[in-house]
Amino acid sequence: MKERLSRLYALQKVDSSLNELQEMKGDLPETVKSLESRLGEMGAAVKALDETITGALIERDRSDLEAAELREKIERDKDRQYHVRSNREYDALTKEIDEAVARSSELEKAMDTLADKARLAREDKEKLEEQRREVETELMERRKELELISKSTEEEELNLQHEREKLVHRIKREREEDLREYERIRPAKGGVAVVPIRRGACAGCYSAVPPQRILEIRASERMYSCEHCGRILISDEVAENSADVR
Image (cartoon, rainbow, N blue to C red):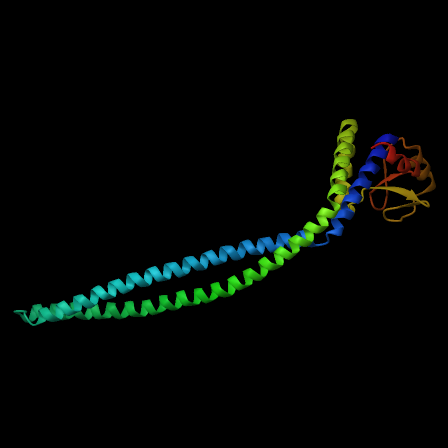
């Protein structure tokens, strides 16, 4: 049992060291991730604006073509009015001309609206692209900062990760339930699941441990948890021996 507890504490020390290396990076990893996400959203927004501009211009060109065809039709119909043989024929042409003029007016208004739509989309795109350039610059700077820190700790981090893999393998081989319990407690307790008793108290929450329980923990015949914080408690002897079980 002592070796099982020692390995759990050894794993705790490795994880605490890894956490310290992560803390050196501060909020840079999250900042980089957030900036990358913003950049992706901005790229999608620029693409949507491009589609809006293209769609508005295509629709304006179609309206312009239809308006030009209507103008030609109006001129033809007006010319035909001079050669009609009856009032009915004249009235029919007049109706067609009026309808074409009304439709042409609608198209002119639609083209103005579409031109405004394309213009506003261009302005929005210019503003967004300027913002995107600013985000790209900030992202490059943050990536460089993170790269420098990561490079300085890379070797130590790799060694710790390798050490962790070995410990996890050994713990799972001996008793996988120990690892599950450790992984269950750790996220809820600030990354610290296994602590020794210091001066008669839990080193995690500093609550006093009853003398009888301290004697039982020192015997290391089973796994004990702090009655207040739920962390796994170990004796000084187990903590000292953790360096020899890696």
